[in-house]
Amino acid sequence: MSPAKKQTVTALAGGVGASKLLLGLYHAMDPGDLTIIVNTGDDITMHGLKISPDLDIVTYTLAGIVNPTTGWGIRGETFHFLKRLGTYGREIWFNLGDRDLATHIHRTDLLAHGKTLSQAADHIRTSLGVKSRILPMSDQPVPTIIETADGKIHFQEYLIKHRTEPGIKAIHFHNVKHSHPAPGVLEAICDADKVIICPSNPLISIGPILAVPRVREQLRARKESVVAVCPIVGGKSLKGPSDKMMMQLGIGSSASAVAKLYADFTGTFVIDRRDAKQSSAIEALGMKVAILPTVMRTRNDKRKLALALLAL
Amino acid sequence: MSPAKKQTVTALAGGVGASKLLLGLYHAMDPGDLTIIVNTGDDITMHGLKISPDLDIVTYTLAGIVNPTTGWGIRGETFHFLKRLGTYGREIWFNLGDRDLATHIHRTDLLAHGKTLSQAADHIRTSLGVKSRILPMSDQPVPTIIETADGKIHFQEYLIKHRTEPGIKAIHFHNVKHSHPAPGVLEAICDADKVIICPSNPLISIGPILAVPRVREQLRARKESVVAVCPIVGGKSLKGPSDKMMMQLGIGSSASAVAKLYADFTGTFVIDRRDAKQSSAIEALGMKVAILPTVMRTRNDKRKLALALLAL
Image (cartoon, rainbow over all chains, first blue to last red; front, side):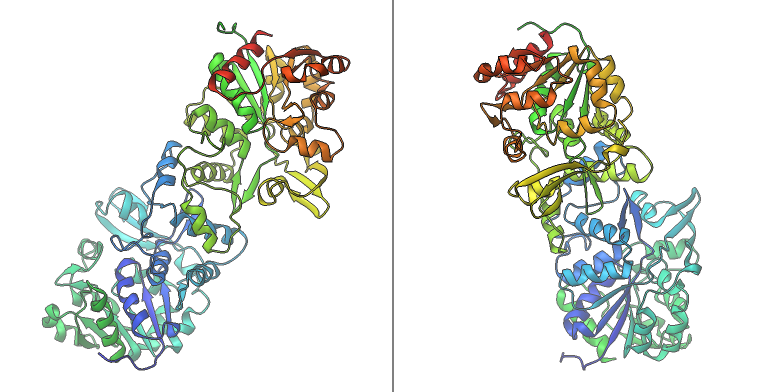
């Protein structure tokens, strides 16, 4: 496929699922023309450290230092710190690698000195040589809280400590009504030639970004330029617990179920060939449908999907 | 030598130099009868982390996990965190090992949650199985500031960043007049059968402890029971820059120079055989002199000196 024509792209992203496509885009276009708005609902304070898992996954991926096996953390990472932390009776279910810790300590100290999360994220990505802008969805903490039969827990507890085992009853984005889009977020959606919704969990990766005041309205205003890549293929999540969570919340686990969640602001909905039968149901929601190979296993898969999206 | 008779001991200590003797005491007596008051003038906040070098050196030594080559840090330590921290443009002259970091993060988080430095130190030493009480000299920060020809710098900058190269003009213990002895410090000096001043730097290890209000007065009240082990042997420091600093401040670098600094509160001054000629000069200051092998190289040296001190 030939190189994409010059255009500016803004992508909405969660963590591991999104990063595959982002890596494809990063190499298929001028990375300086790419802006990424990242979910921070996953953010958590552990042992006094301000941890932003999705920001770090995206940054490490584009910096070329991510652990290729897990999709998070740093390649060749060690966990000497975490093991010893357990000696002090602290909870160690959240993985904190020795190298990764440098990012958390740097960010925590910047925030303690009055910098914003946006400023910290920008310093981290430029320090690591990432040429695309990486914006948190908001500079205010908006923790994703999962309501289970046993009570409310932070999303990271649900995901890692409890391995997504508790049945979920509802999802809350704490204090989201009082949050503001981080500087540049609305402008990036408004000004880009194309807005891409990455194949991330629609409930707890894209959902929190959409819940920040004025973001969804700004996307609606750009509907014709918004392209959403479906994270559910053949009824299953490409990555993570999207399918299970959608089933438990009664939304159903299918491409068209995701399409319904995005219909008000998406112009083109991208599905995999194996979901082609759902095209007419999705078109009936008022969107165009593009059928593309959305399952990215190799570097070439990522680049091919990116080029196809840029060509839409 | 036979085991020492049952007695309670309170030791005043700096870091590496003191720890050799403390390890001897720990194994020569019931460690539950030993209380250690530790210099915190070396404490520094780096990257938002509350670091207490001497508390950690003493704790790691008695816990049996100290790096035996350096006398500080943890055996088999790695520095992956620190290397990556440099990527973010941060100063990395202060060594922060991956395992060691667990102590700093644990302490910083306890302090952030309203615990005192004493409480943090006690939790750390009990978590690591240390049976002796380890008390910081004060719960208030009293940073040691070195005045050089080029300006005032924190002691750690002088020691590590500048490798003790700048000539020193004066030493200040910042805010010490407004500090208080940590809970238990005065009682430990008052109640112990014996008070031992470890062979630490008299200026920047023992000096800060003595400068905390009421500590020196409390030691004077126990003069007959105070035994000080001289850290200068044959005119040279057993460890660290004591000799150089004493010369630069015009105090001179000799056993009797140290004796003068301690004369008001010390009953017995312990010198090495090679300084025996200074005995009468030291006795003239109003102290008894004990001549003992104070150079500790092996585990047995440490135990022998400890037993001899306990037998005084």
